[in-house]
Amino acid sequence: MKKIDAHAHIFERIASFGKCGELRPIGNGVCRWANGDEMAIIPKGYGDKEFMAESLLKIMDEEDVEKAILLQGSLYGFQNEYAVETAEKYPERFKAAVTLDPFCKEAESILNHFINDLHAKVFKFEVSVGGGMMGYHKNFIIDGEPMGKIIERISKVEKATLVLDIGSPYMESCQVEAVDRLAKKYPDLNIVVCHLLAPRKEDGEVLKKALPYLKHKNVWVDLSALPWNVSPEAYPYPTALKFISLAKDILGTEKIIWGTDSPCVMTKFRYADLYNFIIESDVFTEEELEMVFYQNAVEAYYLG
Image 1 (cartoon, rainbow, N blue to C red):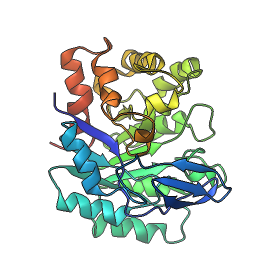
Image 2 (image 1 turned 45 degrees about the horizontal axis):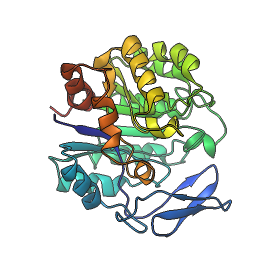
Image 3 (image 1 turned 30 degrees about the vertical axis):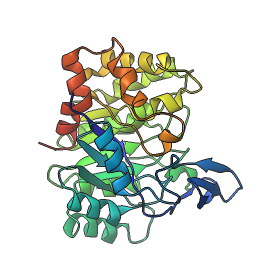
C-alpha cells in the first residue's frame, strides 16, 4: 500500500522558542529548555543536534513511504529555507511548508517573500499553548488580528493549503469555532488541522463535541502523534483507535490523513508501529486505508 507521511519535520539545527524559552541541543538527540527541563527529540542513530532530510529519506525508504509533507514546528524552530531547498532537491519525495510569527513587525514582507520568491503553497502555523505561539504570546483569536490578515493573503494563493496546529481540547488555542469560520469564509482554501486536535485519553467527550466544527468540504485532519498524546498506552493504542473511529463517523474517511510527526515521536515509538496500529485494526476497509494513507493527502496538499 502506498503511503504519504503528511506530517514530518527536518532541521539543520535546533532553533526553538516556546513557553519554556529557548531550546538548546546538548547532544545525542537531547535538548534542554531555558527552565532546565530536558527532552529527547531525535531518535538514537538519526542525528546528534540535527535531523537532516537524508535521515528522513532513509526512514521513508525503509518503511516504503513514497512522499512526505515537511511541516514547520516550534519545537525545532523555523526551518523555512532548508525545507524549501530540500523539496526542490527531492521534488518527488517532499513538499515543504513555510511558517512565520504573525506578531513580527515585518510579517507582511516575510509572507510576500515566501509567496513571491519561494513560491510557497503550504503554510503551517503552530498556535497551540503547548508548543506554539500561544505559549509565548498572549492568547489571541486565530482568525482575528494579527493572523487574520495573514490568512487572508494566503487565501489568494492558487492551490494553497493552510495547516493549523491548534493544540488539545483543554487549551485556549483549540479554537475549532475559528476553523469553522475560516472554512466558510475561504471555501477554496484547503485547511488541515493537525493531530486530530491532540486529544488526551480523557478527552473523548470534548473531542466528540469539537469535531463537528471541522466538518467542511475544504477541511481535513491528520492523525500524527496520536499514540504520543494518549500515552501511556500499549500497542495497538486502543484509545487512539477509538478517536480515529470517532473522526471517521463525524467527518468521514475522506477527511482523515495519516502522518507521524517524526522525528520526535520516534524517541518513544517505532515508525512502523505508527502506521501498523491503524492498518491492523478494523477501523478502515482496504479501500479506505488507501484513502487515509495516500489519496486524501494528495487532495489536501495538491500532490496530483
